[in-house]
Length: 114
Image (cartoon, rainbow, N blue to C red):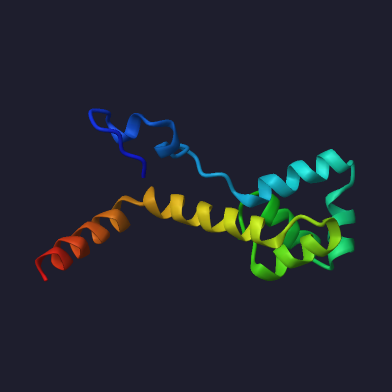
């Protein structure tokens, strides 16, 4: 997190988090549209079932390392980009879970006492 004396860290652009996390499936969906191919064609090229691919594109399934490597092989999009986006999505989603954040806060309080 960037800090500047006298400025609220939440007001610094680099510290802002989107209100809705971006699932990496959205990037793949945009790439499908840009390349002018169908989901069915990408599923065939990669050997990913159409149902699994559709679930990924609609944010219902995560992009796994295997899926990222298959997309990389088909299109040359580096797998680490897709897995990194998935991790960012997972972290942002976890941070929006109020009960989980309360759990983290209680653990941090205990750790601070040690």
